[in-house]
Image (cartoon, rainbow, N blue to C red; front, side, top):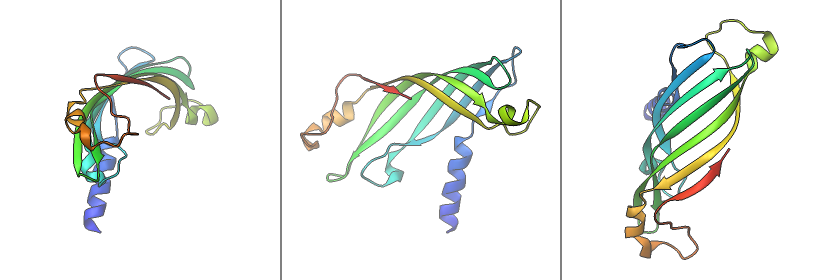
Length: 155
């Protein structure tokens, strides 16, 4: 039980972001770091990878703002039948509309916690998949093994 609580509290601590003080009125910058896990068919501990992000935003009104976000680093995949775990890199960029929920319903004022909703879209670029291609003969024929780079949209 203590081990599970320690792991859970570690993940919660790593997923919080740090927002710098506003450097110009209505502008903000955020830096995030932590651990990501790719959903896969093996133990989740084997798929933990470092992750980082940088975002810059502008608050047009107390409720509405726009934020640009750049994130990425490393991810892992697994082939459970062979116990093969492989790494690849990714980078993503997104543009989000932000909605400050507390200001929407209770008016604007300085708060310690400000819940908000993000609505946006972007693109994810995956690359450096050499480890997966080195074990290509272990992949099933219907799996999506890729070489080079691959782009997908995100929301």
